[in-house]
Amino acid sequence: RPRGGTAAAAEAPAAQLEALRAATPARRADLLLALVGDQVARVLGASDGQAIDPQQPLSELGMDSLMSVELRNRLTSAFALARSLPATLVFDHPTIEALARHLQDLLFADDIPPQAPPTAAPAADAVQAIDELSDEQIEALFARRTAKT
Image (cartoon, rainbow, N blue to C red; front, side, top):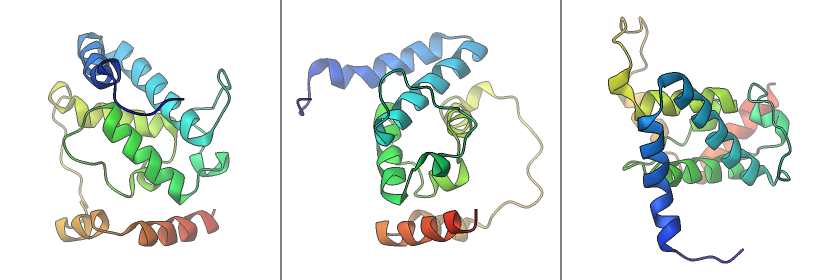
């Protein structure tokens, strides 16, 4: 596959976002599930048309820490996010379904009715510390988390 930027490739995230914005909430959820599933399949090297259960933990599919970083980067680019997704994305949202729900919440927060705040939110300092982990620290954390399962 040739590398490099093309006009079509540069427009793809904008077109995807526009299609998602125009969709009904139910259709949007289906589209996000398909888009996230496609990115996961690419990272895992799954063959075209190979079905991946959206509820199966990605670690069971063979996703390792380097793949999780690649997936995070692909999703950040695919949805033209101004800020990179957190390093713990795959740990916090370990299935295609959970990732799609998280992206829907992130991208369309204005469409979600307000809810009561969680009773035990993580401290802002802890969240910031996690986002500042190096790739090596992420790999070590991923290895520890997957070893427990």
